[in-house]
Image: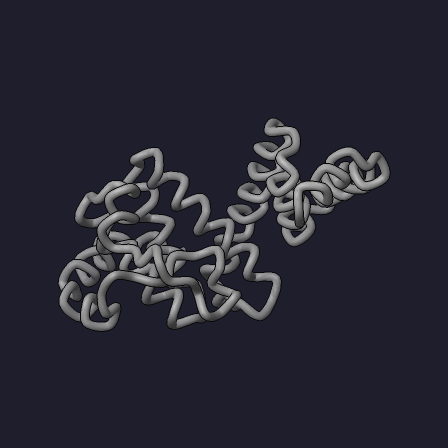
Length: 192
């Protein structure tokens, strides 16, 4: 969207009414897909920050209400609406990390890496887990380990950090002892 299109969307009463109705309906029906669509629209259009926070809190609430069922019964897949649960867990982990809640971020990344059915993202999350185990803050992780010049070749990974400044397979192999230690320490989170 160019600036004129953004301005038109921000000032179009019919569109804003539709967005508000969708937001309320999505919250009432606990529709995580619709909530993310509304959230993305609010963010792109730079609308009411209080509503943005409320939408995000509802997304987290819906995600965490369903986490026990997901852990117990199935793995999350990218090719379904599960993408929105994966995104919610990931964004919340990154948010915790940005506030230097290393343990909280580590727990979320660990659980997510064990409930997704996608090897690329799973391996990327293991890299995050290693960085968290080394107590790296998020800025240092970005600066030293993330390949900021590359973009994801697959659109489905657009919300996630999957490109690094090293060969990921070798890195995981070289840090297997850290991953084994973290699995041992955190596996209780996967148990019912």
